[in-house]
Image (cartoon, rainbow, N blue to C red):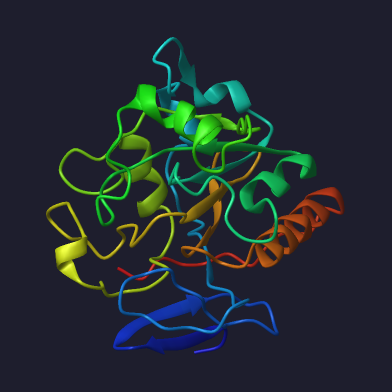
Length: 240
């Protein structure tokens, strides 16, 4: 099938669905998987999505404000299930480097992957500021309260995002490192998976954990150019 590249790594199989050329490589931050640095894993979202992310919202990490995502109507939003201990992975800033490109970046801590985010909401920002990375660091994007991104108690907007896009990979790693039930094919597989929502509130792209940030930026810039020049991405039909 054109634009469909099978992916395998240490028994971990998946499919990259994208019509763009010169891509199809992977990098996965997941226990038991060895990959080369600087690789990409991305899928395009379905064109048959009903509704928008504007139906949802979330509490800021301090619990003081409920933010309806409709606040960002007309803007591009990058949703990241964020590990507070590593605020900006890779390339001297990681996700933080994307903010100047006209994005709204929203971070959502979760403790479902290897129990790597055990702290309370009140502990996450001080840990960033004084411990890692320390030095008075303050994220330049909005963090929200810690919650589930998979399983029976997953946040509803993550249900919407995940069901709007194919899974980046189609199988799971070590189940002893995954803390939710039941496991579903569209689930997020590890920290730092990313979803781009377009200016109409519909998901556009999904990236795997620790995808090279330069590649993510290039994808987003390409998408911006397509919006400016009136070009449209090829639609992806959902395979049920």
